[in-house]
Image (cartoon, rainbow, N blue to C red; front, side, top):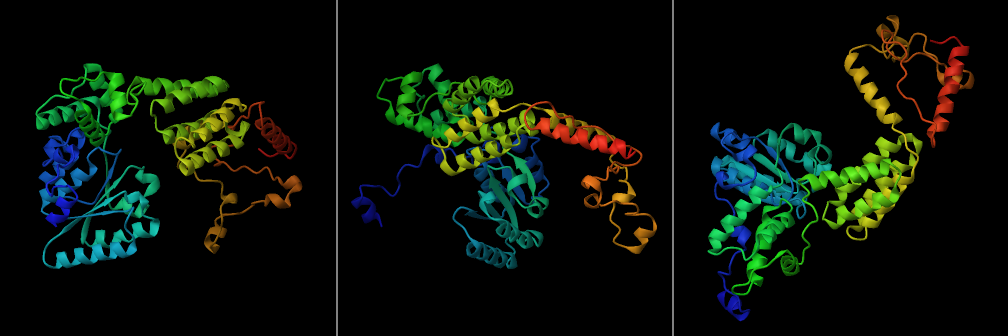
Length: 436
């Protein structure tokens, strides 16, 4: 084997990447996650109690999820087994479970780390349930996606979700200081360039060390890079704003208010600024969907369709081609008729539900699948609307103790003008027929 390395001009002991050399060996060395591994952190308390259950580690890339999983296995004397949902299928899972059962028979427990666990389909996720329940494996899954949307409820009910935070500037700074100590030399950057590198990492510790390594490789003896030179060396622009600070919130606020104010030009400008600064396009896509339901609603129901389709188009095309779909959606929602009537009505309904959440619906609209329920009045007096004149009975559907409520008030704009006409028509029929 060594001859092969020599023939290729390589060494068997080739230098390891800086991020690998700086990988923490204890939980105390993990930076940026004090709420989990600090003196009073959740994981610290678990290990002190010698009780480690199945976990889902949720957070952005480069925040220490894989490292923490390895360290947990070491700290609890569990056999560490790692798979990736990207490269594994049902056959791979079966083998992993079989090996875990064999280890269990000789008294060795297994910590199974599943990277990108959200990429497993529902059936594959269900396959974990038996081995979690009988203690064959302690599952530790890592995901960058919201577990509430991407993981089965049954799986989530058997695991605790721990949130990993993007590394802040202080945490990235500590990583860089540790890298300088290992390298035995400072980063050849001006103070401004060092701050720019921290921002370029975007909360990703691994990315910050990769960038630092690129800088050391590129620097000639005695050379120091400013912000412009740094951008040339690493082929990455310094962000226009720090996405974790005020710039992020200021610009997304400006984008939303430009849409609400029906100014497509200003909305496109802020969209372009955020994309140019490296903002997550999917974050922007989610906000555009929010604008469609909050500020347009039923004034133009098509706005939600367009916004959702733009998100799907970006998923399909990626950057930069998919960014045009976001621009199209922004122009659409900015020029659509505006209404917050549904938004306002839903808030009012939530308040009403909180106040009267235990009230029984009127019996006439309840099904009566048993004779007993029929005898006590369930379904008694219900009128099937399709059999009524104008397919409208005008019955009361609110709890009797609450009485009829008026929550949704359409505006005189867009399609809600038509909805308002329908509601006024039904109100007139209700009044003519003497319905309360």
